[in-house]
Length: 203
Image 1 (tube, rainbow, N blue to C red):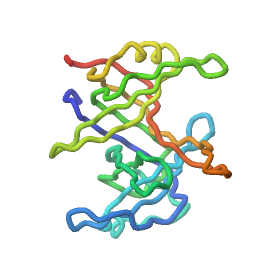
Image 2 (cartoon, rainbow, N blue to C red; image 1 turned 90 degrees about the vertical axis):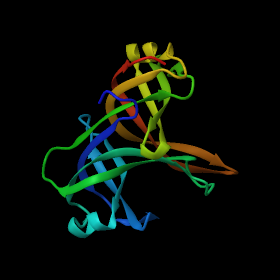
Image 3 (tube, helix red, strand yellow; image 1 turned 135 degrees about the horizontal axis):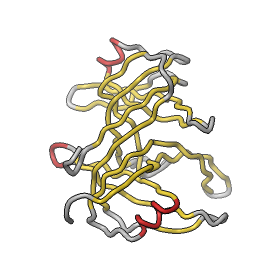
């Protein structure tokens, strides 16, 4: 994974919802379903997995069953005005039933496209937000929000737009509340929690 733009991910978890139509591209119909992946802490991330109609024909998704998927983390802009503006999904290249232990691993190589945001939580914990542009083929890119903690957050706070980085980590979900007029809505954000990160190559 030496080249800028690498994107590899693996999930293994339990389907907690049925597959529903997502979109069509180049004559292929895609569906999305929620996969729950437990963390070591006992908490769980519920992640949206996108799979093709052909994949689901050979590997039907049933609620409560466990599945292993390999693929990429993808993003697209939500122009509906409802929910997050940047939608993060797991794009499955392979999908199969599995009874293995939960897994949530990824490796990304990309370029910082926004200045890092280093700060401290109310409890004093150091955190840094990054936005990583990861190239696909044919000139497209995925824009992926990442977070780092502690000493790694301090390191990332000194990075600059245009720096190329390679990271390993996991895809996670996080609930938050947003005020819409006079009512509060619960929403879900998806981000990459980096476990290890290093700069690569030149700007």
